[in-house]
Amino acid sequence: MYRELLFWVLRRRRPWRVSGRSMEPHLEHGQLLLVDTRVDTVRLAVGDTIVCRHPHKSIDVVKFIADIEGDLMTLESPGGDDSRQFGRVSTASVQGRVTANLSTWRVLAATPAP
Figure 1 (cartoon, rainbow, N blue to C red):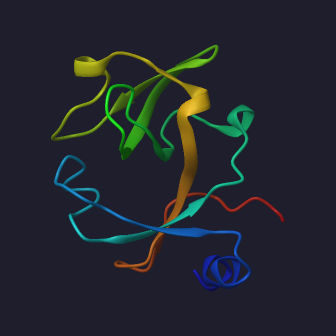
Figure 2 (cartoon, rainbow, N blue to C red; figure 1 turned 30 degrees about the horizontal axis):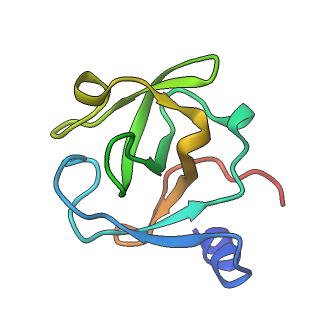
Figure 3 (tube, helix red, strand yellow; figure 1 turned 135 degrees about the vertical axis):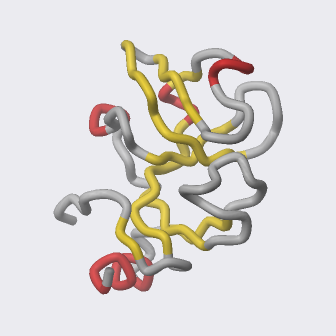
């Protein structure tokens, strides 16, 4: 976790606050996440938690990647809109990969070397 905090101080992570309940019980409304915005779409993997642009609204959303096929992803969330409602999403819409949940002091993804 300290490595993630250091990356935040070095501006290699961006804070992002969960808004809504679509990701409960994994992520709760109001929790503070750290997001690696330097994510390369080649490094995205099934199971990653990502922040991306909603395909039909001007908002960023946090979702799990359920499937990647070429340049398209299937996104899942336990309790809200996901690819079942809005379809597959382009990998180009990814704003970043969630690396840590500061509210629970939990690292969510392996941290690549800088």
